Image (cartoon, rainbow, N blue to C red; front, side, top):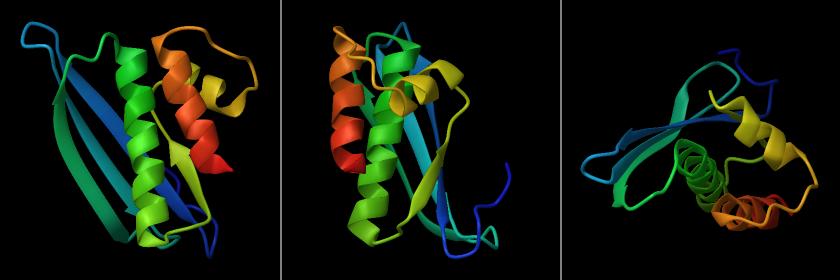
Length: 109
């Protein structure tokens, strides 16, 4: 986990899934270029269908936290590379995750 460049922030986010209980927990931390925590959030919701959808939702919530707190510009760090690739890409995904990725693209505008 490398710190962001001077004057920028980094969103670290992760999701954990309880498949049996159909619960998902999210943890979001935004750090500055010195590694200090500037904002954080955690929440729990029900009924996320898959780990990639959960991770995409965590990224979406992290971006919303950065916008709400004015911690911009920012980068995103996630342990689910395929979701980061979808966020960075322009491919239209016609699935549940597609709507979350579209929300992320809207936040990035």
